Length: 568
Image (cartoon, rainbow, N blue to C red; front, side):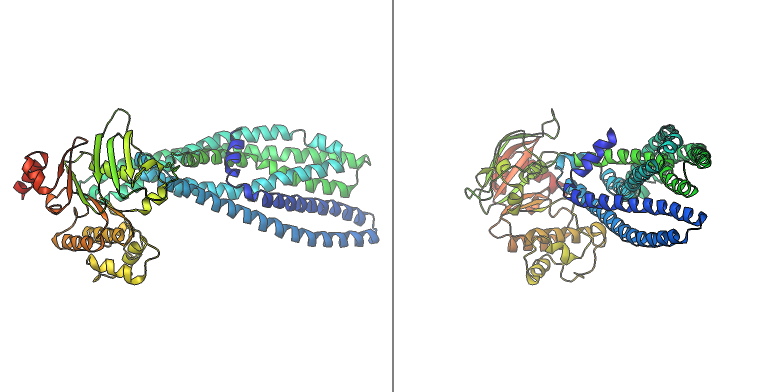
């Protein structure tokens, strides 16, 4: 059964809570047993009243009071333990899913839309959390209640139980069959809502472009059509519910009617007292209430299965490989590429036998036209992707042999797309080195020329309260604060004005002294002083040397330089 596989998968991350779950079940069964006994005693009390037996009346009143006290204690234990387990499961569910996202390979993250990922976390995961709470507080309790009450009914009168509950299997099948199509419509609605949420996030993220290109009407139409799918699924689901609910209510009454008629006859025949019939009706009604809600429970189960599939897809994503054991340097050569080939997709080669060596403390620039493979080299260096062939050595060890956490301790990074956390400028810089003291953080912020800004106010989502140049300077400050041996910079000055570029250059020269710097640059005027320039074309390193040496070659680098100077 599919739900069994979902439950097994869910419990695989919650095995340590099994003893707590068993304890909760113990109190749940005990509590329902107490309630059943209270109902049974209520019948005896009724018989004592009809027989005018005051002695028995007093005894049963005392028993009811004592049982009610025990019931209140057991009810507290059940509520506390079930809610504790529910919240614990929810916490584990969120942490496990978040952990899978953070452990995902860059290939998976690049191939999946951010809007869809966020929709699964915010929409599907929250819905699954609700289903977990429902299962723990209602479905599990309902199953225990049915079993306990049915057992009590059988002990009071097996004959009445066999006759009165004969229609229950038919009722259960009917509830199951009516709940299944409603649940399927609910699954379609969840998928449609997820796609609509993802589309909405994309629209909000690109709102400025939408306005500039006057695409509001077209994209609003697309979003409207997606929302219409959700509405259509909801309307169909409600229509089916309006048809099925009266039938379910009618069928829910039938067992009670049969029990009342047959039970009255048994009482008249002297085989059961009026009080026991009263107790029986109380217990059977409680058992039948759980069956009457079966359609709703079936719908919840199918909703859970549908939602779980989308969450489990995240759990099954390709994780970044981290099987290496190397944690220390073998030699003093930071980077060695030897005939490295790589492609993001099979049959689409990006790098072709790329080879170069970078010495310790060397300032190296990688240049070339767009699409020549510069950023790909940086991604391979960072361990985000694995090469197809060749060798990449970091301090003498193959990159794949390094423990990824230890490898990245040696590296700082400034990317093309600057990401800032919603905290302050100070928070965004400090995150690079949790052991840095306040003065060290302020020194590097001052070095990039941000000391005149408010360092402790939130910068907004992705740093929206700062200009592009200011965001880039925060990213540079963050990279310089980290005590790393290798500094990777992908177009660090591309979005900077002249003043910002000056501050960044000064900061890099001051704080990157002794570090191995590898910089991707389009603006060749920023890398005149590089110790080595690697010029790439079509995924190959075609030239290597200093600025003067490459200019003398009169090749690709010189052509790029002349073109930029001509444009100026």
